[in-house]
Image: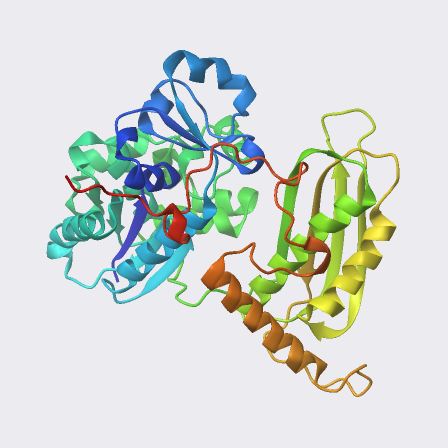
Length: 424
């Protein structure tokens, strides 16, 4: 079996450029939630020295000096384009594993001799139908496909596609030698530092290391990676994602929050979003945890958590909100300037609940399901803020809400945000 890794180039930036062609060729950076750190950079911004994860205030002067276009994250836009990309990729392969919002492993449907033309055709299709640039790495293992994708982006001669089988042995050795071990899939900073201290500096060094020594000192996972670098498949294509163990919904506040009512309002919004995710994944939650915390960068740091187990698994807002509100009262401490709040839904179950003989109202769960479906239909048709629940309310412009001052319009999910074309 031959595998391909398809990865969209600077995905968030590419999504923004799709609807704002004026950004082509300009340095662009997309910020994280609350306009905090750089989470996506154009090649031009990378060349200017903006590093991944760098807080905006650290390079704000650089941005002004070089006229870097700085944008807030627009996850509605990115999510819709990601869904379209994954559907297109799934139609072009025998099997598919969606790895992240902008990456997908595919089982190549053609013979090795035709892999290059298939990959180039795939890139052209994506560019023509979605307007997104992608790179493709093709190899016999997932790890090598990842490496080849990295080379497809880095090496100009690759022209966006790198086929492991088309590389001669000398070129493989050279590129392996030039690939730092820290750039390999699954090798974090700490592990990279340990390996480098042992003389394992590059992908080539890791591939040549004694297998028994590697397994003894670093475990099975790295030993499998080494085998994959040697062309021996150890990781299968996961076409069905494993069931989720938990669902987390949290956000930082735009300003410090001290009032319990504001914390409750934010937690209500998180609860509603958590219920949406439960419905999307056909899950029920058995427990909920509430988290509130102050800024870890200021004196007197406080982090409060409280857990509630539900009488039985549920995704009824009334049941979950009662548990969240009770836990919030325990976690909240007066006199603290809170910077973030969130909920964690866990003990998730994929099957429907059994009936509660002691329910306050017979059929309450069924009514809750119908209410959620009606709410979702209304929001899908008229917008997120046309109908909402309880404490979360419809209030716009909350002064504590997450900052997104530079967010582009929701071109694919809001009629009023559609680009306007003038005929002359």
